[in-house]
Image (cartoon, rainbow, N blue to C red; front, side, top):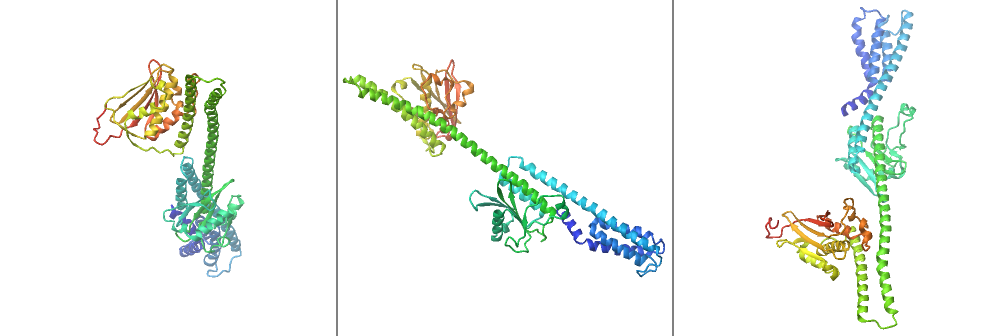
Length: 535
């Protein structure tokens, strides 16, 4: 296909030579039959030659062929032979009619050829744009789009090297994506011209549109010569800004063609069309990223409002209770009994524990979201982790918890502090929702592939439509109104910690009522342990 595109400019370049050679060859072929045909019949044969030249080379070579045929017919086929004098005055009329008809045939046939060539170029351009735009409508990356753009431009122009310079957010920062052999794209002169195009938003080196294109009102980028941009005038490469109505996304560089010739207007027009498609894609990608950032900011504002609301309630409530307790103690006129003081101090401790737990939850969540709390993995017994978690709840609540582990339960490789927080959140959640006297059970099992740990209660349970939502930040279920308030962060922190360890957590029903939170993490066999060491 590339060779075919190169053939048409070659025919146009040697059109006059083709016209002259056609007339000479035709005359040599016609000359032996001069005595066998009437002198007027040669005009028809020469008109055929003019039409053929017009169909091959265009209007101007066809006009040259018409004039050459005019003189050849007069010189070789009209008496007296070998001179340009005309013996019969009526032959003058035949000569001039022949010349006029030849000119008209040349003009009409040449224009038909040009229109046919234009239609083929338009068809090729439409197919190219359809193929390229079909890739752009899919969800591809900027780098993949750049690779496809460079491949299409290379196929159209046959350039030695092609590169796309993408403008960065920082001033002067550009990313260059180029064809595999595009070493020339990194030269200092190319870089300077790219910077010039980026600043001036003008193309460099594009061919001047023909009069027919200007008459049709075709849009064409503002173009300057290489000399006007401060480069050598003999350069044959092109620089095209990728610009939309709102921003400039980059610069497309098309190097010199492999045959050393400058790009034709038709090739440049297809490059411009591809550049426009790429500009639209880059603008759409930019707007999508802006929209994502706007959504993220909106979500951050929403979470901030929720956080402020949760913090203001969860921190102010125990503070208000502490203030009331201390005020009551200080304003007593009579000495208080030790039992009463101890009871008030116990209430203070509970409020401080509640306040500290809320602050710890907020800090844990912020560290997890910032990836600043990386797990420090080591081997631990589940019993030790559960014991550390139970030590953080009150003695009254601790008495309601029963732990049942199989005797052959192996150790797990986790972060001890993080998993203590996991068990603490699950225990506090189960104790809060199961009532004052209902038991809470902790169990575990293992298989060669995973270890399961669960905490179950006999509370109201969790509706099926809430079993995923309860792990969202600041979400508290429908039954939250019947229990003491919380931040709604415990289960969200639990899920993040479990996810960091490669596990998963979910909710199951307990018969006849209640909820069971199950954690599953992949097993890592301890050194020396058989793979079938548990069941």
